[in-house]
Length: 358
Image (cartoon, rainbow, N blue to C red; front, side, top):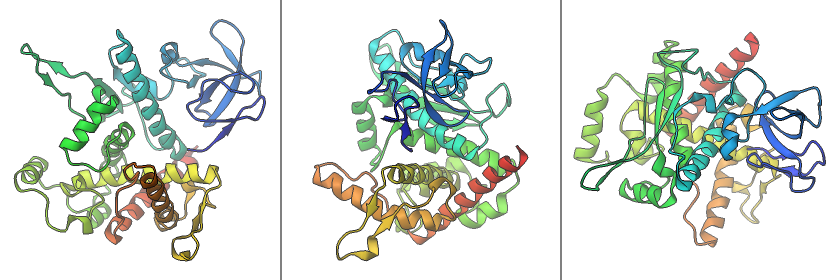
């Protein structure tokens, strides 16, 4: 995620800011140009850009509870991210509102990447059968008081996210129980959206041959693959070919995990570039790197990885110095890099096609 600047005073501002700390102007994110803008009130509902007073916008309807800071300039009440929501967390309690704020923050980070690449994201009005839609599900409480956790998953464009995972304690308990090195709300959004992207860019375009050459045959029974995973454990040496243990379950999960990691890497490299970060450890030139290119327009996955590995090593070392676990506890083996290269070509080709059609 890149840094932004206030239109009014040039103060550095961030993607999730609501107000400029220097000039106190209200801030909002406009998907039309993928930028944060300083705003001035025009009337009760409308705002104008400080940089362009003729541009009138409204805040997303979810701004009322400070859920969202995105702007709308069409007939929709909700912004381009929030209009994909179907079931939202319970807002009758402060805890429910806070959950939704954290969920929305992760969702908006996901949509920033989708919009940067102009990847397909039809909603259910545009695509009633397979459009992208989100349900943020509450856990069920049985009569005996036991809690049945809601399930996170994807089915033909419908992405379900367990709302309780917005709570740090609940999410950490799930991470520990699943023996996962990394588990975040943003990770859930990126992984589950990877399944949706597979539908749109591979299945619906009949791109099976290229996919199977890299990830394997997705026609193997998914349910049986899951049962085998839980009954017999992980295949020995899975780390040599997969980005995570879960990726080794089935080619669909492998694709979704790699898609999530591709977004992790690109978005974090854009942040590093915005801050002018360079890694130049003394006496270790082999792990020196500088992000002197636009990660969203990288020439190849190899270019991304060459910058990412030194940066992630440095970030992990800093985390350990603070007594924290590694931010990126993963190894990018040659087979994984090949999968990321496939994803890079898939995403860039889709972005270029969309740009040429515009």
